[in-house]
View (cartoon, rainbow, N blue to C red):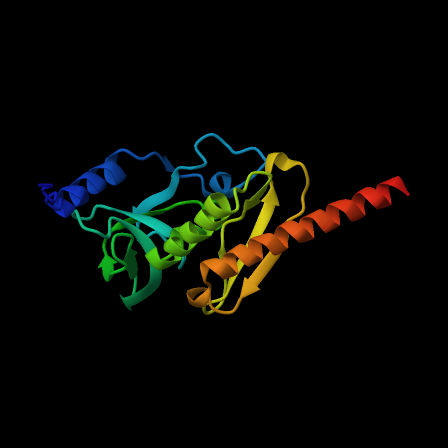
Length: 217
């Protein structure tokens, strides 16, 4: 008989608190942290920025780490809102990465991940249902369609329940990226995903043939 493991959420909080409080590097030069030069990243660019009390540099939407705060599921989370009920004493509404719970914090330090990096990872804000959608899309493309040359792109979730599916060409052989959009991702079946993949493959092939003809003319 398989024994179900005991949950260890409190231990997880203790570990996350220690690692995020004492094992992360910080980037205190804000301009350098957000700067790009020739497409190359500065050393330490992935470090969190800031760390001071009442850090005015943070913005709503930032992925932040608390410091000088007790262990909790809000040690790392999304900054949802700021306010000052007492002038000079900012408060921060943090959304926990663990379960989405909200909590107001004050008299704490805040560091944020450079926004350019956060913008590269919209999937960090996905719900578990959206991740499940992505896994179905991958299963259709790789499991049923044997995707190799034409591979799936990550879903792009838009306003409301909109979603866009698309494909890319592996190995960078071309820049053709056909897409298909749907008004409600909750209603997109595996059959609809399969049809979208086939349509994208056909569209890519048509564009490829047209480009070859134009080049030969």
